[in-house]
Every structure is written in structure tokens, then in C-alpha cells.
Length: 115
Image (cartoon, rainbow, N blue to C red):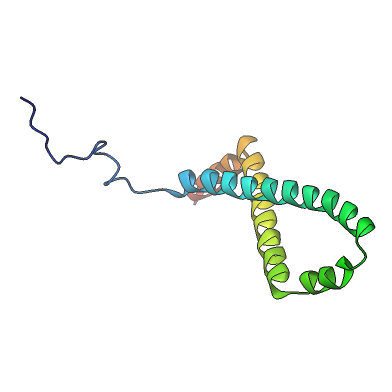
């Protein structure tokens, strides 16, 4: 006879404290997936918009109202924020791969020892 205890499946997760080194790659991937989704959606929208605008001329006033809405401006700002974060985090990742920050910390350590 099995006794079901109320134990968590993985006991190490509730006591795990996330570090910056583990949250940056996760947020980098999330921002990259968001940007890829935006690019794909805008590509499909542009393909369909060309067909719709050439076929129906009544779409232009609706399209003007849609493009001048606050929702589009907010989504562009969020996309620009995600793009800048993804770009700067990618540059930081490249610099870390080439050990640029390792040399800087070694220089600081050597200066402290010389004093």
C-alpha cells in the first residue's frame, strides 16, 4: 500500500534564488521570440494588406484610423524596447564570450594589489 505524501516533486525549486546570470539569457530568449513573432506577423500582414488594398478601396479610411490609434503606438514602443534590450544583451553576451570583462576585472585586481 502506497502512502501519498504532500511533498513537492522537486524540492530544490522553492529554495532556489534566481541570479542575474540565469535571468538574462531567459529574458534574451523571450525578447527574441517576441521580436520574431512581430516580424512574422508584420510580414504576413503586409502580404495580406497589399491584396486587400488593391481589391477594396473602402479599406483606406479604416486603415488610417487603425494606424493612427494609440494601440499601434504602444505596440511600437514595446517592440522598440524589446529590440534595444535584445541588441544590448547580445552585445554584452559577445563581449563576455571574448572575455573582455575578465581582463577588466584582472586589471582592477592587479591595481588593488599594487596599492
